[in-house]
Length: 245
Image (cartoon, rainbow, N blue to C red; front, side):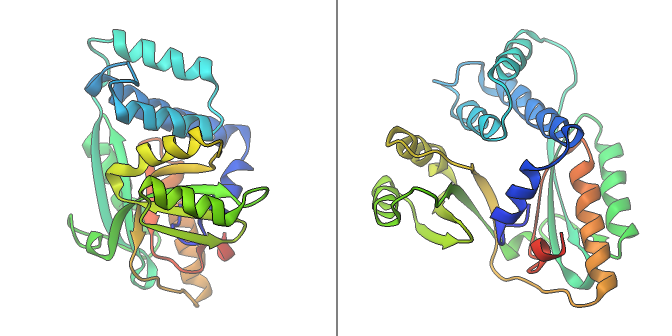
């Protein structure tokens, strides 16, 4: 996920093969399971669960799958114990990269992450080495087709949004991180449907790549991250990512 021209990335993800779609289902399933164990199986009292269910539905995860994962996680006393670890580093030519993971084996995951950074011309850094170049924001994406821009902007700002951006066939509504779920629900109640709605790392500045080898390596690095089952999301400040991918 790029955070820049994000709609191109989302469209590409929606067109992926069944195998890649299954990977997305697996990653979201793991996220649901962790959230249920932490806060319980009732979305009414577990706002994180409510948010990730909305994310699952936006990614076309069937309702039966969601309910099955919730029930299984609620009934489990043992099983894998996942922890959330965020890795930071640099891609070719200093592209800033943040990788969010859920892992039951931090040694395996750390080794994989370091390998991907090293193999494609980057390097993994210490915690905090690039996160200062990003801000955490809620980002709600709604397709422009059939939507009245002025009305949506008014509804979004009334609900508490901090910014409203029109970009490449979609509207992006920015929120404070903790307000994202409530604003999404407010807009849903008004009849809007969304492409995605989640808290993201949004870069403060972007870096373009011009060298063909750097572009190739950066694209391959991102592909390796996204194909890894432990990785939940990848954020970066590569400006021309969507053109290259």
